[in-house]
Length: 391
Ligand code: NIG
Ligand code: FE
Image 1 (tube, rainbow, N blue to C red):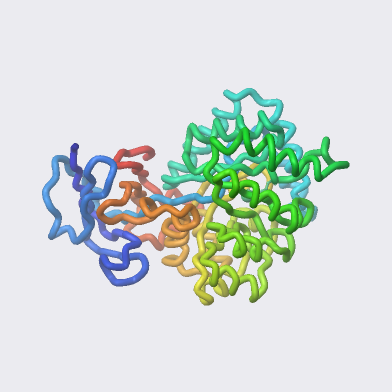
Image 2: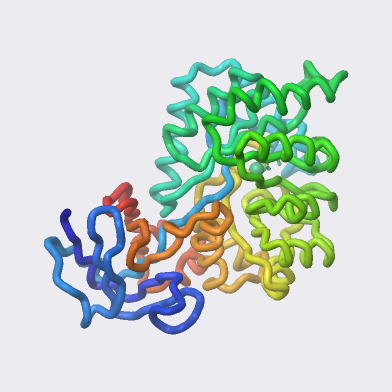
């Protein structure tokens, strides 16, 4: 196997507290990395670096773990810019536009879905993302949901069955029949193509009781639970996530103190989606209350055509710092190691011996530039499994 020495690193964020400055970021200055095939073989001070077959000099740039975008709906057809414009003119976000995307997605060819997803994945990669989760939920039929998961699997193993996104119009008069379909035939068709089960537990989507029913069926079929919860109003999402030992509850815009305590006690990650709060002009979640209480916080894009047509993790970091009062270090940790925890992965989100060689080289000497230079091209190149995938 070929080994590569990455040198000239002004600042290396490892997310391994045993390396470097002792902080959660495990930060080293004047550092080097050695890659062996797809893995990191060594991380440390440049002066101590072992020799390698090849050498890449990043000339004084910062290197950070690749972003782990643990919440996206990246496979869909169509777009909803008119809905966004109406919102910016004062309309509220209700999730009602989901059916517009369902209609476009049902009508699209598989290649159309594939090309759209590939374009978004390319954007994600060029802004430093190396691991991405992708949900179904824009077909809401047995074959359509399976098709979305099959297309998602072409990009990632982190696929999530979200048949319980909303009740489609044709079942409006019989919710129970739709729930029976999701928990029966649809789950059966989708389970082999998914790792996770998700439910949109919120106003206008699914109630607490319905959410429990779908999660229980998913878990019985071998899927791992995660949830959309507490986005539009305070509801039972966080409580149910804790009850099911879910990996993560996502959005968390409306939480109460008892929800925060339940997430902490159950070890559920709170995944915050600042792109959605931005694009729906909603309040931002109270990240400080979560972090100060000891809850693990992740940041993700929620990339979807309705509430957050965002592919950039650096933008999410910048919003989390400016609008949610996270420090630049906390936001970077949440966008990398936090995302890995939300996906129950320990091979990504860190740069230490044995981890996947997934990282972003910044066009900057420090990770702070991710928040300090919003909207600029701060990521110079992206590497995944030891190879350059963008930049
Ligand atoms: O995460 N909240 C539910 N689902 C998506 C939005 C989907 C849409 O509006 O198309 C979300 O925000
Ligand atoms: Fe979402």
